[in-house]
Image (cartoon, rainbow, N blue to C red; front, side, top):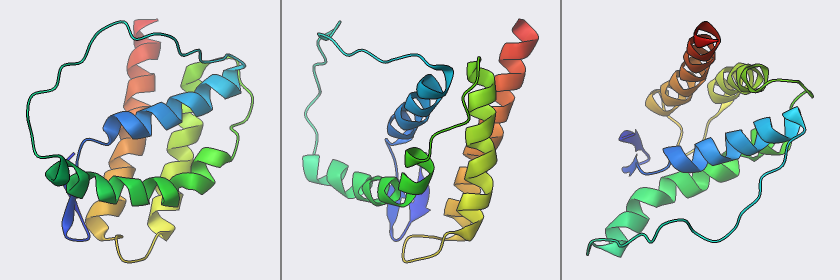
Length: 129
């Protein structure tokens, strides 16, 4: 992460974006996600929660900007790779069209990189069989 966004740094949001994209793929494949009791106890080290908030504000706004991507269902498919590639195909043009107080060339490049990495992940999985 570490992408500069409107005077802040996009940090600690890869798991959030991944979760939304996974939910999209799961629905496209016709599967479901179940949430239950935690498997582990997460004990956090002391840290500045306001500093964390500062670094998460940009991600919160970006989730709002991502809603058109997140809320538009993917084409039904039998496999996760195809779903991931459809997400990747959507991200590039979407990012290129974004403007506003947070949007910069660096942020658009970040989402193009996310799209490219989704494609690389699918290629690697398919090569592994």
